[in-house]
Structures are given as C-alpha cells and as structure tokens.
Amino acid sequence: MPAASRARRNQAAQMRAPLCLLLLVAHAVDMLALNRRKKQVGTGLGGNCTGCVICSEENGCSACQQRLFLFIRRDGIRQYGKCVHDCPPGYFGVRGQEVNRCKKCGTTCESCFSQDFCIRCKRRFYLHKGKCLPTCPRGTMAHQNTRECQERSPNQKKGRKDQRLRKDRKLDRKLDVRPRRPSD
Picture 1 (tube, rainbow, N blue to C red):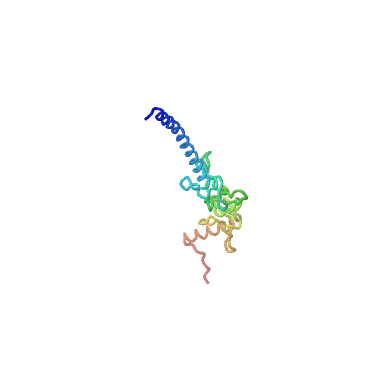
Picture 2 (picture 1 turned 90 degrees about the vertical axis):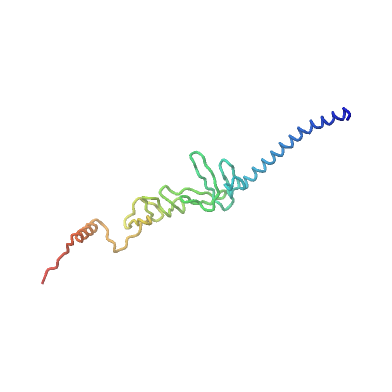
C-alpha cells in the first residue's frame, strides 16, 4: 500500500473521531431537551407530575391541567406542588382564571367548604352555623360525638336553678328519700 494512501486514511480517521464526538454530544443534548419536555407534560418523575402542565424535579408541579387543583405542600422553607382532583382534608378548592388552588382551612377547622365556612371542627371546638367555637352559644348545647352545637328543645331546662333541682333529685334518688304524702 502506498504511503500516500496510508497517510490519507490516517488523516480521514483523525477527522472522523472529532466528528463522531461532536455528533454524540449533539445527540445527548437533544435527548436532554426531549426529557425536559416530557417532564413538563407530566410523564416523568415516577408519576409525581401526573396532571401537571409544568413540572420540575425540585418543586413538583407549578401549573396543573384545567380541572385539577394545585396543592402546595410546605416542608420548612421548601414547597412541593402536586395536581389533585380534590383537595386533602384541612384544605378547600378555589377555582381561578389562571390556576385552581387548594387553600388551608381556618385554624379551628378540620374540614371546610371555604375559608369562612367549616364543616367539621378540630378537638375542643364545636360547630355552630359554619363556625368553630370553643363553647356553644346560649340556647344550644354541645353534642360530644359530632362536636356540633344543637338547638335545645323547649322541654330541656336551662339555668342554675334547674341544674340545682336536678342535682337535688339525683341526691334524693341516691339516698332514696322521697317526699311523703300526708296520710288521711
């Protein structure tokens, strides 16, 4: 094989190596961009971006599909977004023109319909007309199982005098003391 021919082959091989390397880098950049686009439409991160329009590995969803709510979970100074059909307990859904969001219920509410209307109260609070109160208002009494204030029936006695009479009757039953009728 002539030396000139061998020199041309070596020269061609030396030029192919950088060209192949350049093509390999270009392909890797294209794959990276494709992977980013997939994450933005919600197919990446093991299902954590389901329903997302925009998603990042660091913060989760930042925009959801039209009918879903954006629920932002906070962990210290970090926050992570997730698209949900229904807001979790302790939150209520607010529909907006740009974004539907889950907002936190009031501090005394366990579950709510809106910021100003509770459905269920936290411990030590009683539900009365959509508000959570530490005690039930006059004319109502606390129902312990449901933690709701219920209207008193007209037959239910109220006031200190009635409470004293009930205590006296209870004591009479314990002592088995009954008022005696005068004999004829």
